[in-house]
Image (cartoon, rainbow, N blue to C red; front, side):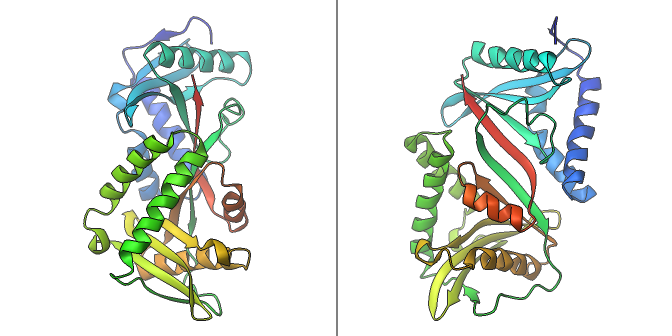
Length: 293
């Protein structure tokens, strides 16, 4: 892109952006209501974005605060692969850096997003994944599932928080201190009433009389969707096939809550989990990448 200029009338860009995002979600298997709900999330803060063009493609960028740090975001970039696309990315990075951003993030919708190659140098920080739950899914043989008790909740919570902080740090975007602050904020937002937060269910998975893992899901998270916050197999029980079993438990819990699809996030750097999700048919809805500036 040459001769890049900021535009004041964003109507033409926005119409195209919304259709591209919707199409990406539909291609990943989302229903129309779910695609619309995800689009609403993607448009959060859109009125504060800066949009630029060279007359052939678009760039949409913004800078916001995240855990006390200024973060640049490339919300949209359309250009033919090659020098024009690279020039657009470089312009976006400079724009963010000039406004004090210490890193720049990009959200790529759908596994086949054409921008993946352009942002290949940006490490993957996380993905959101989804698949339709089987109708009437059965629990795996030899595995029992029961509700986590309220007495078990404090110990479970401490373990979940520690694991979440470790996942954030491993993804490489935040320091341990920033990760702890984000964890505190996210848990307070997700579980304002703790064990009794409406719509949330907690499970213990047992095999041979031992608790081998736990699950935490939020029913009705989006239209027809249960969100799997955690489907955790304890480390000492991994490598025994329980990973696939935990995913089956997630599908079972989804149907128990009256939903049709299971969605969850996975942090970058967790290649074992991503490989499991590839094998079990969980499509990538969004991929998040970032790069220090």
